[in-house]
Image 1 (tube, rainbow, N blue to C red):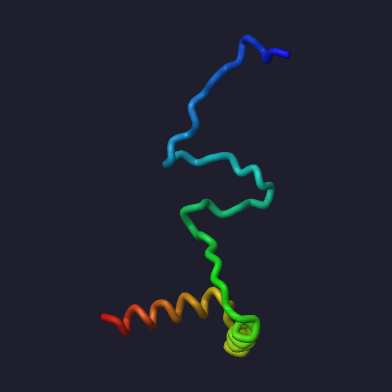
Image 2: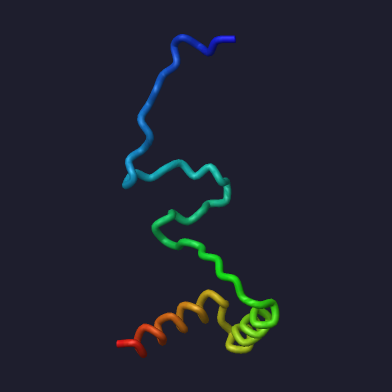
Length: 75
């Protein structure tokens, strides 16, 4: 079976052009945040999560603060 003869080809959007959000979740643009994954022992994950909760902050905020502290220490 052949495809349609009158197919229209368009160029993909440029990297700096906004793209259509097809997730339906109102996703934040890629330039705002980027998820990362790290592997830690289950016990360490529980410890980190509990500590962040005790401090009233998210694990993301805790890890970003730790990164900032590490960078400042290494200067």
